[in-house]
Image (cartoon, rainbow, N blue to C red; front, top):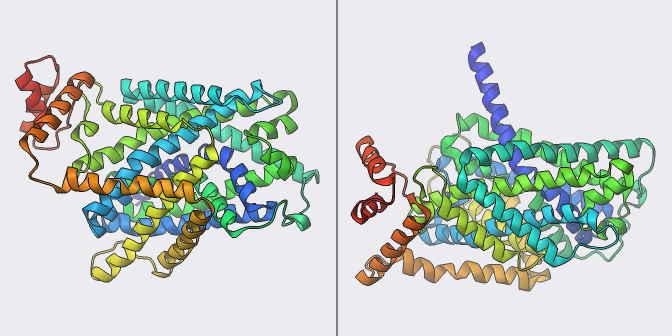
Length: 496
């Protein structure tokens, strides 16, 4: 009994730490400005952070039920596909591949650039071309690391995780010191005094900005098949991790406003750097270095985990097989990493991080709502289905009401940004019918796709991972080692 309890506690800590490390990232160093700008007052900005944490927890509980009811890796892609059909699942995958992952990585890379370059331009903003160039170099370097070695990628993640913890600890401790000295820049009684007129559309955008910092809360649903005792550890991780993240985020934002007025915060593109300059004196260099380490690790983590969705999509036949292939010796998903890197570099055409956050936040919430609606549909369609975790339907209803408010007013406030996201999503409809739904394609088309796959395999030295019997696994080892073998053997490995 003692051994079982010890093992359970160890597994719970591991799951919680995984979830915490995936949520806490660059968002808390970039989103405060966007939240403050749209919330229009210090008090409402703090309420936005708290409410976003509560809504995130509700969404995570809904996903927990879905995760153990449909125990497939792939997260909301797998749930939407099973509940609403192949087209809906494909659109989720399509928008994730083309928008969500590349935009997230672009924002984190631009945050890295801002915190590296801001100390070099103390009296003005860094040049946009410099920001984009450094962000591109960061992406290319980390893509190479992830292509070269899984072990190197995990070591980079472990080394740079300490950066965000150091930066956040410094911010919160210095904020507490300021409060103890009685030096907040905004008295609590005047916290809701607006510096611009309140607008419900802008408040919706404030929630989108805040939700970016909570991104990663559904990471465990992407690896449900790999979790040990998910019925216990999944809800436990949610109940521990998300309240802790909310606490850290709220106190970090309180710390910001103890040292900076709202105007000073809005005038800074690197909030933590400005905070450090005001409170740390000669030691202010610690802050940009800590945040740069954190965001560098954040880009690496996003590149490292994004391939899971590619594998889930390829397994269902929704993505080109080449994107789910791995290197014959290094076992790294080189085609998926190269595709993600190129699409992220295209996102760097703009260096406006807050537009990118609105862009990805709207699309993310669109499918979060569709997924949670799927939970209600599944309850009605299959009421007797075994659900190891079953929550009250009050929670998905609350989530969907908030979701409707957010999407309607975000679309009203930023019709162009949100409209572009919807347009990109709808381009997936003809792609689905031509590429997935249409079975009897002309032979010349299949031959062309096969040839391109073969060329891609030769170029990247990759094969499709075997998931069959041991004999087939041994056969694949024989045909997949050197791709310089005979063409017939290489094609055989492509067909595995």
